Image 1: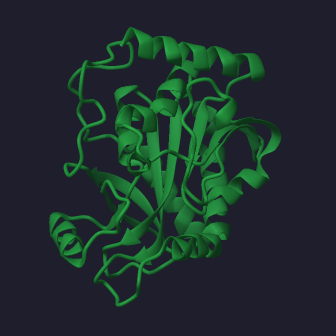
Image 2: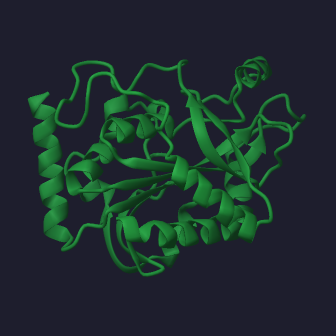
Length: 277
């Protein structure tokens, strides 16, 4: 554990030498949603491969950059590319950046992802506000010795996604899109898409969307007392909902079509919460 902490401090020291002022707000850009990074101004860009002890993104649509700058005049950190369990990383590695954010002083984390729609009232291109999650099909990212420096051994998960943030996102989506989707995001380990039987089971359990990321990050953020907001782009309907063949190309293509609404929502959201940071 001490070695892990030493690695984190090495990472933090490197970043602090490269960036003069560290923002209090961070956002993780999911598959196909990295174009928001193009709108960031006053950039300082650190490639993951250059940051000591940082994992490397291996998935198409995940560029692999940590970007410091301003979006709508609000200072932010953007992860243009995340890490997944299915890439071969263990869960401590996939959530390593969240621990780094905490040590850097980040107070709020916006989690975005591309996911399959389970709720049959959803359609491709919808943006869904995450209000809860399912994750008991995978091991807990907090398994092992507790990191007391960050949080308690046992944590209440009922407020993982901040309720005030959910309210703000509903108002913004109603304004820019005319409606909002809200629901439960289910985490599966991947890299295979789920079977139709698994999707039926997840629907019975109350899931509205399913993906291969986000939940470990949300758990570690909550453990570290970082407030979370979650936005899912429904890039395809999950297996068995339609007769379509699922593919990562479809995920990226649909995310591209949804990017205008996605950008509007994120930009207004960060402006509304900027005062509290």
